[in-house]
Image 1 (cartoon, rainbow, N blue to C red):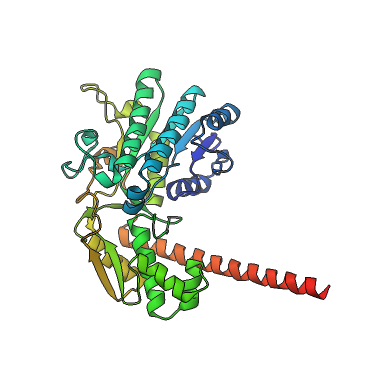
Image 2 (spheres, rainbow, N blue to C red):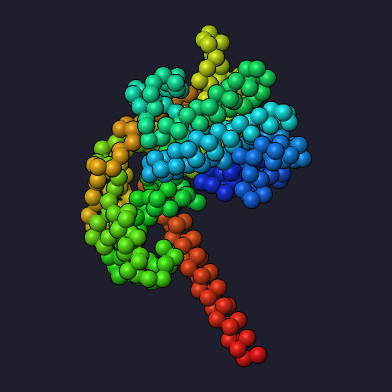
Length: 372
């Protein structure tokens, strides 16, 4: 993959896709293709077919997905399996039909069974039952990995799948209902801190609400008040976290240096040729929450609700395969959360300023009409 190669980033607005797009732009890549959902619905086979016929990308990085935390996975089970399967089937198949030189598919470590040994290496996929809460999403990601491998074996394509661990970073989803664990906890603590410090204007602007009483009722639904923040589960499960900028580095490293043939052990049956991507370090949810407390400056009580699901109890991936090929992460967890929180605050301020600007413009327009 060269700087003038025609590269399509599917899902360029998301956490992963935006990080990869920034990295490609910073590296001086000049021929990048990306479309919003309104411009190209990846669940629509005919739209995807037409896109590949017209654009003919040489390289594809498939980041587009419907993703979320435990709450979203539990509530939107049909959406998670249907939308992800449709995206993967359409993009991977038409990448093959149009002769794409190389494709990178972003999966997830949810593909591993809940009883896998730790640290979990790539051979564990399809060797046990999946965690119930994430099962529809996980099955769709397993299907994507198998599609890439199967197209390689039948059609001699060069499609590579990666299974990154839990991701966080700039441009993450901070929705209180649908977010992953790091942005979800971070925003909860930020809002509780604003409430505790009586910074009500900032709180209402963050929530895009006008009435404080309504805001308090809304926050209470998510276990947020001026003295405490509720965390799902009992805090004992372990997770590992990778900053999206590190994943972007890994993605480009693989696109430039690794091919499907490099992932095959000819002494064994060709299967599970995906690559784990992560830091090889885990942390309990309680330890994570305390770390985010420190970064945000939240000094009040954390309430761990054991009546809400923990998800899989323990996760730690074996990343020795990608390490042996020459890539390792650079951003430690505290540094990454600090970067993420600063991004959140900076973008929130811009959002607040733009709202006030729009209000002033609206008031001025009304006054001008009345004068006229």
